[in-house]
Length: 99
Figure (cartoon, rainbow, N blue to C red):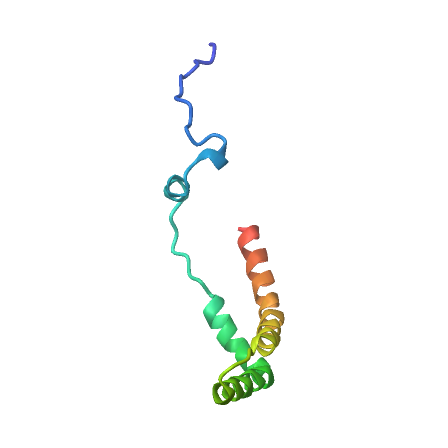
């Protein structure tokens, strides 16, 4: 018995970079995806209270002065948050790739 050849229409999204984002999203299996980022960041806030307090003090000074920027303090706070959340993300990535 010889294998039968089936004719298939050429996929318009081949290669994938030619495919519109909407078409890609509808082609992927739909699953209930829960974004854990806000919860993890909230849990990490307690580790970064010192940086957040400095940022809040800066915001108050800026409000009184009427000019300036608190960007360095904001970056310090988010750097602390990023350092705290990275083990959570690494763990989640390992779990999802093992599936």
